[in-house]
Length: 255
Ligand SMILES: NC(=O)c1ccc[n+]([C@@H]2O[C@H](COP(=O)([O-])OP(=O)(O)OC[C@H]3O[C@@H](n4cnc5c(N)ncnc54)[C@H](O)[C@@H]3O)[C@@H](O)[C@H]2O)c1
Image (cartoon, rainbow, N blue to C red; front, side, top):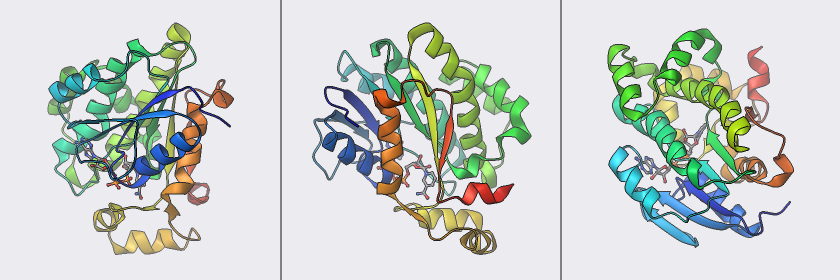
Protein backbone atom coordinates (compact mmCIF):
# COMPACT_ATOMS: atom_id res chain seq x y z
CA UNK A 1 0.00 0.00 0.00
CA UNK A 2 1.32 3.42 -0.92
CA UNK A 3 0.51 7.01 -0.07
CA UNK A 4 3.02 8.27 -2.63
CA UNK A 5 2.22 11.74 -3.88
CA UNK A 6 -0.49 12.38 -1.29
CA UNK A 7 -0.56 15.41 1.00
CA UNK A 8 -2.01 14.46 4.37
CA UNK A 9 -2.96 16.78 7.22
CA UNK A 10 -2.84 15.04 10.60
CA UNK A 11 -3.91 16.59 13.90
CA UNK A 12 -2.46 15.46 17.23
CA UNK A 13 0.98 14.72 15.70
CA UNK A 14 2.90 15.78 18.79
CA UNK A 15 2.04 12.68 20.82
CA UNK A 16 0.63 9.15 20.86
CA UNK A 17 -1.49 7.87 17.95
CA UNK A 18 -1.13 11.03 15.82
CA UNK A 19 2.68 10.83 15.96
CA UNK A 20 2.59 7.16 14.84
CA UNK A 21 0.18 7.96 11.99
CA UNK A 22 2.49 10.75 10.84
CA UNK A 23 5.56 8.49 10.95
CA UNK A 24 3.84 5.69 9.03
CA UNK A 25 2.24 7.98 6.45
CA UNK A 26 5.65 9.52 5.66
CA UNK A 27 7.16 6.03 5.43
CA UNK A 28 4.40 5.14 2.95
CA UNK A 29 5.32 8.13 0.81
CA UNK A 30 2.96 10.91 1.92
CA UNK A 31 3.86 14.50 2.56
CA UNK A 32 2.60 15.10 6.11
CA UNK A 33 1.52 18.42 7.61
CA UNK A 34 1.03 18.15 11.37
CA UNK A 35 -1.31 20.30 13.45
CA UNK A 36 -1.06 20.35 17.24
CA UNK A 37 -1.09 22.77 20.19
CA UNK A 38 2.34 21.41 21.22
CA UNK A 39 5.54 21.36 19.21
CA UNK A 40 6.26 18.06 17.43
CA UNK A 41 9.13 15.76 18.36
CA UNK A 42 9.43 14.00 15.00
CA UNK A 43 10.23 14.95 11.42
CA UNK A 44 7.29 16.31 9.42
CA UNK A 45 6.99 18.01 6.03
CA UNK A 46 5.19 20.93 7.63
CA UNK A 47 3.72 21.87 10.99
CA UNK A 48 1.08 24.34 12.09
CA UNK A 49 0.84 25.11 15.78
CA UNK A 50 -2.82 25.65 16.62
CA UNK A 51 -5.35 25.29 19.40
CA UNK A 52 -8.07 23.13 17.84
CA UNK A 53 -10.62 24.19 20.46
CA UNK A 54 -10.90 27.66 18.91
CA UNK A 55 -12.67 28.57 15.65
CA UNK A 56 -10.33 31.53 15.05
CA UNK A 57 -7.25 29.34 15.59
CA UNK A 58 -8.63 26.62 13.29
CA UNK A 59 -9.36 29.18 10.57
CA UNK A 60 -5.86 30.65 10.92
CA UNK A 61 -4.38 27.13 10.71
CA UNK A 62 -6.40 26.24 7.60
CA UNK A 63 -5.11 29.40 5.90
CA UNK A 64 -1.58 27.96 6.27
CA UNK A 65 -2.42 24.55 4.78
CA UNK A 66 -1.60 23.55 1.18
CA UNK A 67 -4.13 24.36 -1.56
CA UNK A 68 -4.74 20.63 -2.16
CA UNK A 69 -5.21 18.15 0.68
CA UNK A 70 -5.64 14.44 -0.14
CA UNK A 71 -6.47 13.28 3.38
CA UNK A 72 -7.28 14.75 6.78
CA UNK A 73 -6.75 12.63 9.90
CA UNK A 74 -8.52 14.10 12.92
CA UNK A 75 -6.56 12.42 15.71
CA UNK A 76 -6.14 15.19 18.33
CA UNK A 77 -8.31 14.72 21.39
CA UNK A 78 -8.54 15.30 25.12
CA UNK A 79 -9.72 12.84 27.81
CA UNK A 80 -12.82 13.22 29.99
CA UNK A 81 -10.66 14.41 32.90
CA UNK A 82 -10.37 17.73 31.03
CA UNK A 83 -12.95 20.50 31.32
CA UNK A 84 -16.25 19.41 29.70
CA UNK A 85 -16.42 22.45 27.43
CA UNK A 86 -12.90 21.71 26.16
CA UNK A 87 -13.85 18.08 25.45
CA UNK A 88 -16.83 19.29 23.38
CA UNK A 89 -14.72 21.84 21.50
CA UNK A 90 -11.69 19.68 20.70
CA UNK A 91 -13.22 16.21 20.28
CA UNK A 92 -16.35 17.27 18.40
CA UNK A 93 -17.11 20.90 17.48
CA UNK A 94 -13.57 21.82 16.43
CA UNK A 95 -13.10 18.55 14.55
CA UNK A 96 -16.30 19.21 12.59
CA UNK A 97 -15.23 22.77 11.86
CA UNK A 98 -11.75 21.77 10.69
CA UNK A 99 -13.20 19.08 8.41
CA UNK A 100 -15.70 21.54 6.90
CA UNK A 101 -12.95 24.11 6.30
CA UNK A 102 -10.52 21.61 4.72
CA UNK A 103 -13.21 20.02 2.50
CA UNK A 104 -13.01 22.72 -0.23
CA UNK A 105 -9.31 21.83 -0.65
CA UNK A 106 -10.13 18.18 -1.27
CA UNK A 107 -10.62 16.61 -4.70
CA UNK A 108 -12.57 13.50 -5.71
CA UNK A 109 -10.93 10.48 -4.02
CA UNK A 110 -9.80 12.34 -0.89
CA UNK A 111 -10.38 10.91 2.57
CA UNK A 112 -11.20 12.09 6.10
CA UNK A 113 -10.45 9.79 9.04
CA UNK A 114 -11.77 10.61 12.52
CA UNK A 115 -10.46 8.86 15.62
CA UNK A 116 -13.48 7.89 17.70
CA UNK A 117 -13.19 5.33 20.54
CA UNK A 118 -14.53 2.07 21.83
CA UNK A 119 -16.09 4.33 24.49
CA UNK A 120 -18.47 5.64 21.82
CA UNK A 121 -20.03 2.20 21.30
CA UNK A 122 -23.30 3.14 23.07
CA UNK A 123 -24.25 5.71 20.40
CA UNK A 124 -27.48 3.83 19.45
CA UNK A 125 -28.89 4.60 22.93
CA UNK A 126 -28.81 8.35 22.18
CA UNK A 127 -29.20 8.32 18.40
CA UNK A 128 -31.99 10.93 18.18
CA UNK A 129 -30.02 13.35 20.38
CA UNK A 130 -26.81 12.89 18.41
CA UNK A 131 -28.67 13.36 15.13
CA UNK A 132 -30.19 16.59 16.44
CA UNK A 133 -26.72 17.83 17.45
CA UNK A 134 -25.34 16.78 14.06
CA UNK A 135 -28.01 18.83 12.33
CA UNK A 136 -27.00 21.96 14.29
CA UNK A 137 -24.59 22.98 11.56
CA UNK A 138 -21.49 25.03 12.28
CA UNK A 139 -19.43 25.44 15.45
CA UNK A 140 -21.58 28.19 17.01
CA UNK A 141 -24.91 26.44 16.31
CA UNK A 142 -23.47 23.25 17.80
CA UNK A 143 -22.22 25.13 20.88
CA UNK A 144 -25.65 26.77 21.24
CA UNK A 145 -27.39 23.36 21.01
CA UNK A 146 -25.10 22.05 23.74
CA UNK A 147 -25.92 25.02 25.98
CA UNK A 148 -29.58 24.10 25.65
CA UNK A 149 -28.84 20.36 26.16
CA UNK A 150 -26.05 20.21 28.78
CA UNK A 151 -23.89 17.08 28.94
CA UNK A 152 -22.83 15.55 32.31
CA UNK A 153 -19.10 15.98 32.87
CA UNK A 154 -18.58 12.36 34.08
CA UNK A 155 -19.67 10.96 30.70
CA UNK A 156 -18.80 13.83 28.35
CA UNK A 157 -15.91 11.95 26.71
CA UNK A 158 -18.17 9.01 25.83
CA UNK A 159 -20.95 11.41 24.73
CA UNK A 160 -18.76 13.31 22.26
CA UNK A 161 -17.19 10.15 20.82
CA UNK A 162 -20.74 8.82 20.28
CA UNK A 163 -21.70 12.17 18.71
CA UNK A 164 -18.61 12.00 16.48
CA UNK A 165 -19.57 8.53 15.21
CA UNK A 166 -23.13 9.67 14.44
CA UNK A 167 -22.03 12.93 12.73
CA UNK A 168 -19.35 11.13 10.71
CA UNK A 169 -21.77 8.41 9.61
CA UNK A 170 -24.60 10.75 8.66
CA UNK A 171 -22.37 13.38 7.03
CA UNK A 172 -20.16 10.94 5.15
CA UNK A 173 -22.58 9.96 2.41
CA UNK A 174 -23.45 13.60 1.62
CA UNK A 175 -19.79 14.41 1.03
CA UNK A 176 -19.14 11.14 -0.84
CA UNK A 177 -22.08 11.76 -3.22
CA UNK A 178 -21.43 15.47 -3.68
CA UNK A 179 -17.64 15.52 -3.78
CA UNK A 180 -16.33 11.95 -3.87
CA UNK A 181 -14.70 12.52 -0.47
CA UNK A 182 -14.89 9.56 1.89
CA UNK A 183 -15.19 9.90 5.68
CA UNK A 184 -14.71 7.10 8.22
CA UNK A 185 -13.97 6.63 11.91
CA UNK A 186 -11.41 4.38 13.57
CA UNK A 187 -12.41 3.31 17.10
CA UNK A 188 -9.42 2.27 19.21
CA UNK A 189 -9.74 0.33 22.44
CA UNK A 190 -7.33 1.28 25.26
CA UNK A 191 -3.93 2.29 23.83
CA UNK A 192 -0.62 2.89 25.61
CA UNK A 193 -0.28 6.67 25.13
CA UNK A 194 0.17 9.51 27.63
CA UNK A 195 -3.62 9.81 28.15
CA UNK A 196 -4.22 6.17 29.10
CA UNK A 197 -3.88 7.10 32.82
CA UNK A 198 -6.60 9.74 32.39
CA UNK A 199 -8.94 7.07 31.02
CA UNK A 200 -8.27 4.88 34.06
CA UNK A 201 -9.09 7.84 36.32
CA UNK A 202 -12.17 8.66 34.22
CA UNK A 203 -13.64 5.13 34.17
CA UNK A 204 -12.64 3.95 37.66
CA UNK A 205 -10.72 0.84 38.74
CA UNK A 206 -13.75 -1.50 38.68
CA UNK A 207 -14.54 -0.87 34.99
CA UNK A 208 -10.86 -0.95 34.02
CA UNK A 209 -10.34 -4.32 35.74
CA UNK A 210 -13.47 -5.76 34.12
CA UNK A 211 -12.26 -4.59 30.69
CA UNK A 212 -8.77 -5.97 31.33
CA UNK A 213 -10.28 -9.48 31.49
CA UNK A 214 -11.83 -9.00 28.02
CA UNK A 215 -8.57 -8.34 26.16
CA UNK A 216 -4.98 -9.53 25.94
CA UNK A 217 -3.54 -6.08 26.66
CA UNK A 218 -4.02 -2.44 25.69
CA UNK A 219 -2.89 -1.70 22.14
CA UNK A 220 0.15 0.19 20.92
CA UNK A 221 -0.20 3.37 18.88
CA UNK A 222 1.62 1.68 15.98
CA UNK A 223 -1.17 -0.94 15.91
CA UNK A 224 -3.82 1.76 15.35
CA UNK A 225 -1.87 3.79 12.76
CA UNK A 226 -1.93 1.26 9.84
CA UNK A 227 -5.74 1.21 9.75
CA UNK A 228 -5.82 5.01 9.66
CA UNK A 229 -3.27 5.24 6.82
CA UNK A 230 -5.07 2.46 4.94
CA UNK A 231 -8.29 4.53 5.09
CA UNK A 232 -6.31 7.44 3.57
CA UNK A 233 -5.13 5.24 0.70
CA UNK A 234 -6.79 4.48 -2.65
CA UNK A 235 -7.03 0.83 -1.53
CA UNK A 236 -9.94 1.97 0.70
CA UNK A 237 -11.64 3.92 -2.11
CA UNK A 238 -15.00 2.11 -1.63
CA UNK A 239 -15.01 2.40 2.18
CA UNK A 240 -17.08 5.30 3.51
CA UNK A 241 -19.30 5.89 6.53
CA UNK A 242 -17.70 3.12 8.61
CA UNK A 243 -16.61 3.11 12.27
CA UNK A 244 -13.86 0.50 12.36
CA UNK A 245 -12.91 -0.97 15.75
CA UNK A 246 -9.15 -1.46 16.25
CA UNK A 247 -9.24 -2.79 19.76
CA UNK A 248 -7.83 -6.32 19.97
CA UNK A 249 -11.39 -7.65 19.84
CA UNK A 250 -12.73 -6.00 23.00
CA UNK A 251 -15.82 -4.53 21.28
CA UNK A 252 -16.85 -8.01 20.16
CA UNK A 253 -17.24 -8.96 23.84
CA UNK A 254 -19.95 -6.32 24.43
CA UNK A 255 -22.61 -8.30 22.56
N1 LIG B 1 -5.10 6.29 24.19
C1 LIG B 1 -6.24 5.64 24.21
O1 LIG B 1 -6.45 4.69 25.01
C2 LIG B 1 -7.34 6.00 23.26
C3 LIG B 1 -8.42 5.14 23.08
C4 LIG B 1 -9.45 5.47 22.20
C5 LIG B 1 -9.40 6.67 21.52
N2 LIG B 1 -8.34 7.53 21.72
C6 LIG B 1 -8.36 8.78 20.96
O2 LIG B 1 -7.19 8.84 20.17
C7 LIG B 1 -6.86 10.20 19.89
C8 LIG B 1 -5.38 10.41 20.15
O3 LIG B 1 -5.14 10.21 21.53
P1 LIG B 1 -3.76 9.71 22.10
O4 LIG B 1 -4.03 8.52 22.92
O5 LIG B 1 -2.75 9.67 21.04
O6 LIG B 1 -3.47 10.92 23.14
P2 LIG B 1 -2.22 11.88 23.32
O7 LIG B 1 -2.52 12.73 24.49
O8 LIG B 1 -0.97 11.09 23.29
O9 LIG B 1 -2.29 12.78 21.99
C9 LIG B 1 -3.29 13.74 21.80
C10 LIG B 1 -2.70 14.87 20.98
O10 LIG B 1 -3.75 15.82 20.74
C11 LIG B 1 -3.23 17.12 20.94
N3 LIG B 1 -4.27 18.05 21.35
C12 LIG B 1 -5.10 17.95 22.41
N4 LIG B 1 -5.85 19.06 22.52
C13 LIG B 1 -5.51 19.86 21.48
C14 LIG B 1 -5.93 21.16 21.06
N5 LIG B 1 -6.83 21.88 21.75
N6 LIG B 1 -5.37 21.67 19.94
C15 LIG B 1 -4.41 21.00 19.26
N7 LIG B 1 -3.96 19.78 19.64
C16 LIG B 1 -4.51 19.22 20.73
C17 LIG B 1 -2.21 16.94 22.08
O11 LIG B 1 -1.28 18.03 22.15
C18 LIG B 1 -1.57 15.62 21.70
O12 LIG B 1 -0.45 15.81 20.87
C19 LIG B 1 -7.80 11.03 20.74
O13 LIG B 1 -8.85 11.51 19.94
C20 LIG B 1 -8.31 10.04 21.78
O14 LIG B 1 -9.57 10.40 22.27
C21 LIG B 1 -7.32 7.22 22.55
